[in-house]
Amino acid sequence: MIGIPLGLLAANATEWIVHKYVLHGLGQKKGTFWSFHWHEHHRNARKNDQVDPDYKEPLLTKWNGQSKEALALVGSALAMAPLFPIAPFFTATAFYCAINYYRKHKRAHLDPEWAREHLPWHYDHHMGPNQHANWCVTKPWFDHIMGTREPFVGTEAEQRANEKKSARKAAAAVTPSVQLAAEAL
Image (cartoon, rainbow, N blue to C red):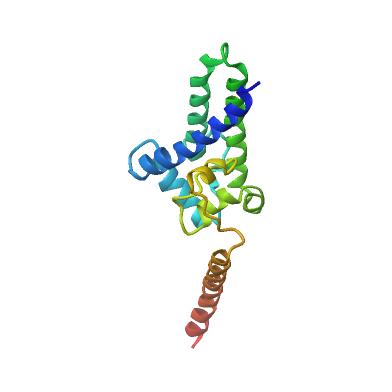
């Protein structure tokens, strides 16, 4: 039974390590398999207020960030499978964590309000000023342990960012009507 808490800790540590060193480390280099994360997923989330349209597609119909993420999760779970005979609880927990990661990550990028409330550390990762912090998705444990948790939700920084966003939207809404009035003259 000790395999369950060990599996939960190992999965959270893996989230942190893979996100920081693979998805952001290797992922910032265009042309690598992992570049989808930084160059597509982060761009989509920033552009669409946390929503990533890749997650609106059925999983196996298109080769995109969602399908690459799912492939990596299945691959990592399969790599753990040989441990099942000697560590069944640990291995089953790792399988659960892979499924839970996919489910929560997908929902976080389809329902920003849910993400802001239930996974604020992941919302902070995408919408906060520092996209190179808050590496965990399911639980912020290793961000706290490693000192990389930087809160954004509910802070003055978020309030200022929202005010700027509102001002940009208001200016964009005014611009077309100003152009129409100018054209009418």
